[in-house]
Amino acid sequence: MKQCPSRSRLIQAGILLALLSLPARAEDTVQDFSPKFSFRLGNGLLSNSGSAGGSSISYLSPHLSFHYFFGPKFSVGAAYRLDLDYALGNVSLHGFYFPVRYHFFGNGTKVRYRAHDEVLSERHDRLSFYLGLEVSRSGYFLGSNPERTTQDLTGSFMGLGAALGGDLRLSQHVELTSEVNYGFMSFASSDDRIKIKGWIFLLGINYLW
Image (cartoon, rainbow, N blue to C red; front, side, top):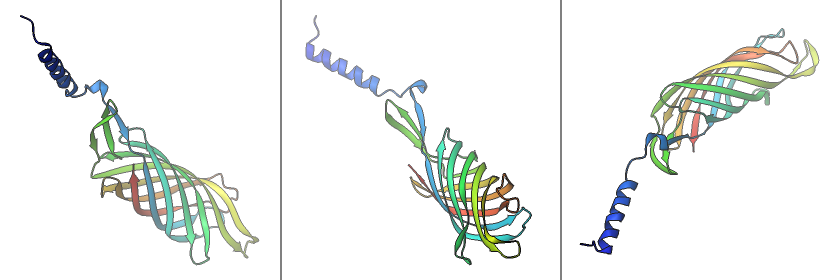
């Protein structure tokens, strides 16, 4: 006995819908990681390890950074920093930083699981902590020092720093972030009198795409 064509089509459609509703296989699922933009303000103590000596306090100094994630716990980034001298009304220190971070507690960013160009699920941890290393190239302007020279002290130097920080999720796209940063080495200075390093505490927000 022949099956009616309309019933056959209904059965075929039902089988197709059942196949489409099956969960994606692990090998068909891919992950992508949200990049992260940060705006923070820094407060701390800067000290000169060069022959000129001296130190100064840095406060409310803006830091901007962008971080790209190669996995849920590992990122590289680029940052720009200004250390302001409000007493003299100038920018005493400015430069570019290139940080590398490893999140040892929680994922460092929002993770999406995709299959066939559709989002299957999303994970964004409430809290995460990280360790970081960074290399920097900074310029400085310290103003005239009549005891040593009649010229303004300007130049640049390279530096290495370490960081310990954490991120707290506030919403789907926004995190509160804080970091303690220690510049432990300065080298390749254009003037051996000036090699600046120090402790900085950073507080601000992250935006995740």
